[in-house]
Amino acid sequence: MRYMLLIYGPEMAPSDAAPMPDMEPWNAYTQWMIDTGIYRAGDPLAPSTDATTVRVQDGRRLTTDGPFAETKEVLGGYYIVDCPDLDAALEAAARCPGAAYGSIEVRPLLDMDMPDVGSGRVAG
Image (tube, rainbow, N blue to C red):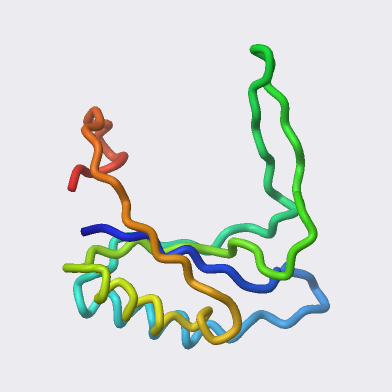
């Protein structure tokens, strides 16, 4: 079963004054997932100030630039894992470096019949 691990934590906006976070724990975590065969995808997200929300009202597209709400934790990245069950996905989430200072939301991905788009989503 595929799960998405949504990584929430404090906003880490890149700036010239702010040092880069230590990536070694993240690299080791990603390598652990690759080594165990559960890794499918993962990426950090740009800061919430770079986000745009799209809504359609009365047939018109409306956009709002971020950030959208004052909050202590923002969605900062994700992993997609393929685990035999929820317990294994929860174990993977507990090993995530972000769990030490934020939270990891674990959500099953629903399998839907989708058209084959070549380099896009792979079924299963």
